[in-house]
Amino acid sequence: MTHPFTYIDPNAKVASNTKIDPFTVIHGDVTIGEGTWIGSNVTIMEGTKIGKNCRIFPGAVIGAIPQDLKFSGEKTTVEIGDNTTIREFVTVNRGTEEKGKTIVGSNCLIMAYSHIAHDCIIGNHCIMSNSVQVAGHVIVGDYAIIGGVSAVHQFVHIGQHTFIAGGSLVSKDVPPYIKAVRNPLSYGGVNSVGLKRRGFTLDKINHVLDIYRIIYNKGLNTSQAVDFIEEEIKASDERDEIVTFIRDSGRGIIKKFTKGLTDED
Image (cartoon, rainbow, N blue to C red; front, side, top):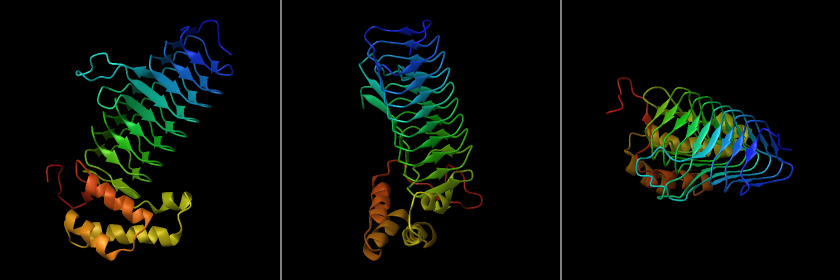
C-alpha cells in the first residue's frame, strides 16, 4: 500500500505488500523487499537494497552519498538485511570505490539519530543504541551491542558478541565475547550475560574467560599471549576466533584498565 502523497521513482522495485507512508521519497535503482514498512518523511536514495519485513521510521535517510571527499560519484550501494529496524533520523551512507557498499545485516536494531558511514559492515542481530556514530570502514560482528552516544573511529573492528558501554570513544579494536567499559575504553571482562542469553554453555564461557585471563592478566604482551594461547589452550571455534581477530587487528586491541592510563599510552 502506497499513500498518494508518496513519490516512488518508476525504476524502483518495491514489493507489492510494502507499506509506505505519506511524504516519503523513493529514488530510482532502489529495491525494497516484501512486508517492509517505511514511515513518513523517509528518503531512500539510489543504490539502496532493503530486505524483507524491515521497519524504517520517520526521518531516516538511507543511501545518501558518502561524506568522503574522495568520493567521485562512482556507483555504490547500501544493503539492509531482513527484519531490521531503523529508527527515527538514522542515516546510512553508500559505500565508496574501496569496498563499493555499506552493509547492515539482518535482525538489527539501529536506534534513533545513529549514523553509519560509508563502507561499514554491520553484522546480524546487532544493536546500536540512540545516537551511536560509526565512521567509515568499521566492521561490527554479529550480536554486538553498542551503547548510546558512543563514537566509533574509522577502520575499527568490533568483534562478535561484544558489549560496549554507552558514551564510549572506540578508537581501538574490541575483541569478540567481551565487555568494553570506562574511559579510555578498556577490557571489562567477558560478556557472560550476553553469551548465556545466546545459548553458550558454562563450559564455553569459562573457556573464553581462560583465554582472556591469559591476554589481560598474565603479564604478557599481546603477541606473547596469542602464542601462549595457541600452544596451551585446546583448539575451539572461540579460541580460533579470538586469536585470528587479534592477529588481524589493524589498530591494536583495547587494553586492561590501569589507573592513570590515557589514550596516548
